[in-house]
Length: 174
Image (tube, rainbow, N blue to C red; front, side, top):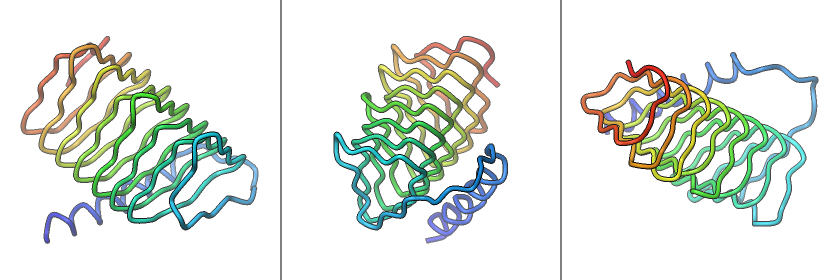
């Protein structure tokens, strides 16, 4: 129970900081969706805020994504930042995030392409093949694992109990 409360508080703080430091665009309306589903072939031409027990993004979001749920799975394209609070986060191998990922969860799995950086807090972060992260990873949690055939093109900054790094970090690991 305390771990869930810690994750919720950490998630709220992480998302608040992410919102504070992300670039500001001219005011636009945002899409608010309460079913948590963006089907393959569906395109949202705006920022998307959604939440449900199970959120699945298979389509394209031409803007930022703000999402909360029990399980969040992204297999589509996000042409902006993804701000995610969930119990489990899965970025599938076909996913393309053209911005940063800000994530608070129990588990985070990344197998897709991230053009920006990853800012995460969870019990476990797993970077799975064929993941490529063009920016830095900033991560706090119990463990971080990078599988073989994964790449971080910049640095890995982490505060963890254990790290298993079988992938490539092109610059520094701290």
